Image (cartoon, rainbow, N blue to C red; front, side):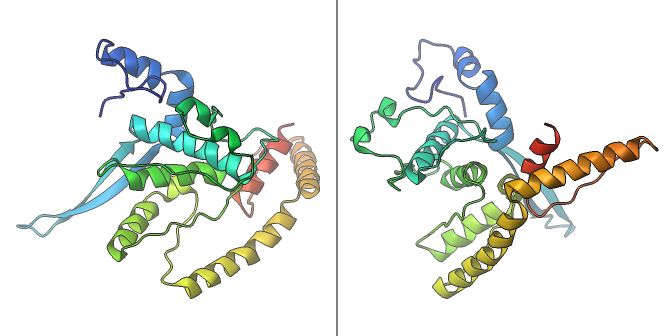
Length: 250
């Protein structure tokens, strides 16, 4: 699929060459780096040879189309506003933070920060809804410090299809998705996550991270005076790893 918009707001004119739209829209530095980091997935499929019975596994690399890229980024921005999240520190996601008003959204001026109304992304059939959900989840997990993302479907076959796609995208999501059968199963899953979240917050508190980083640096520097080597740090979560890294390099 061609990249048909340079800004995500309007389709490029037919009088403009596709190459120019591609360069201005997709190949600018911010968009290209964002695409590489947050909008690439690898899907594996099996195929059995009817004659030999040999099963081959092929891997397909998929990149977001232009409409998926722009829609997901706008959805992330809207979700951040709706949750009242404040960008107090640099986040690991790319956000242009454009006002929804620039897209002609009605009554946007009446939408206050933290109103919990994230909005709706409309899709047509075959537009890649499932992958758009994966891309959105991958970004929002980073932006909101690992929130719980609940995907609700109205058909069992669609539920299985979405779960398979999410499961195949664990590298982008940075965790294993879970499929629940009923509300009781969902409640148990949430309780289990809560039990893990509380100690993770305590172990990864700001003061503790600073103290640990200081101890690691002093210990490693002292050891380097005796002999050269490398150090391996094992942490409880990706968030703690990121915070610890930022503290160590200060």
